[in-house]
Image 1 (tube, rainbow, N blue to C red):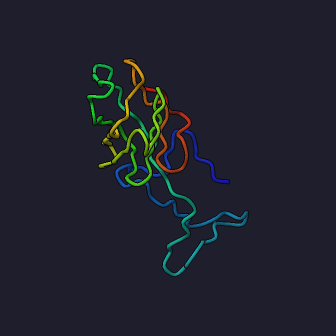
Image 2: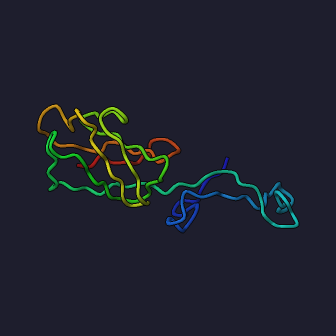
Image 3: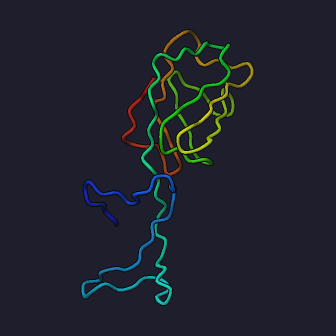
Length: 143
């Protein structure tokens, strides 16, 4: 099991995430022992590191139940091929909406024909985000 020291980061460059976490050496009790091809000092990839995702609140944005067809979500840590949002009221990906992530800070949510953002006028919230490794546990819902 690998543990991160509090206050540290697995990778300091979020612009290049997700990215590999490479193990170069292991302390087996005697000293550090190289891992992987020792001549090239390449190590072994042991995990994929994802940025902690955030979603920027936009409480002044008006989204009409059926008239608004697109909604931009901004934040950080979005991954192009794997980011999924969970909404309140509930929306089903592929049935009610589709999403396109343009970069790590911008995603476009498009409402499908015949669908509604909500059954009646109310606040639309992002309640969860999953950028690939599973729902981010420290996410706070935002409107």
